[in-house]
Length: 342
Ligand code: FES
Image (tube, rainbow, N blue to C red; front, side, top):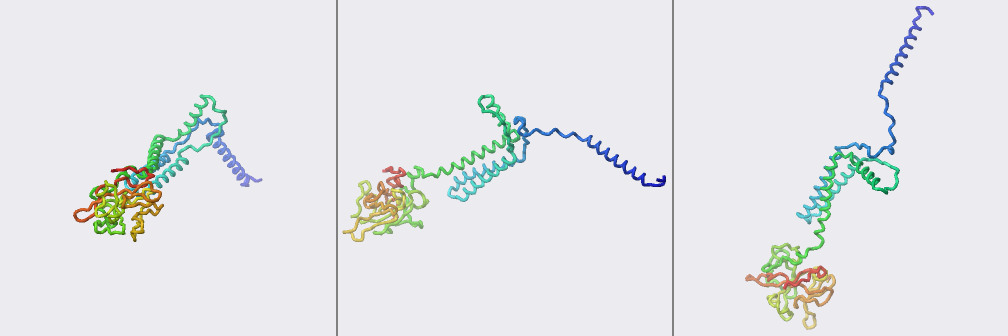
């Protein structure tokens, strides 16, 4: 090898470069922070020392959803009171409330409640100390929730709202006794047809029956509908106290069958008096038959009582008016409404 040959010099320089790089690498490795000791397996961690990271954003979201659910549940009750018949609105209010609550539960389950499985071997909780220890342990499981009071408050409000909403429809379970005792019929109310046209006495013909409603009242109100007929004098045999209730032989009775509440819609009128039976109303449900000429007396069928009668009078212009309310509560007898009013 001649002193002019450049190859050995180049090789030595390369070797030197590699050595420098290795040394630098070793130094860097030594200067790094030492790695933490391997963490203990989860089952070895004392549950009372666990740290559950709080997730304030998720907690706020859950609280917001729960409060919104409460709002919709309260809206259900308000809609029920203000517009009870609007079932679509009721359904929307309750549906949205439950959906919001479900969303809140899902988010809380995923991001708020600590998701840990911890299995700990221990004996039966036979003494008080162990029991207390376990209770403390369970309570500490929720310490990662930073807005517990807010969530608990929102949950309480939502619970109250939903329980209220669920209980509200109980108000619809059957009519109240007040509804039985109050019908739109009072003294002076005119009898009108389904178009609101008042009946004159002369409109009521023999052999036909008419359905009348109270003027200026809700036609669907309990006890609104009455049956009106005109009978010849020889078919009328009312109790003495009711003699004045049928001016010109016109009589009115509740349209609600006192058996099970069907609408009475059949009328039998004799076509040949010597052989025919007396005029009668018949209920199409179970054929209870009532005699309008005899104060609505039950002549056949399962109804337990007579048809309640509405006393009538004719005003100066010939219009038919109620002389008073029904003589007895209207409605099926199994509702316990048989209460004489006069
Ligand atoms: S409901 Fe009228 S007879 Fe039964």
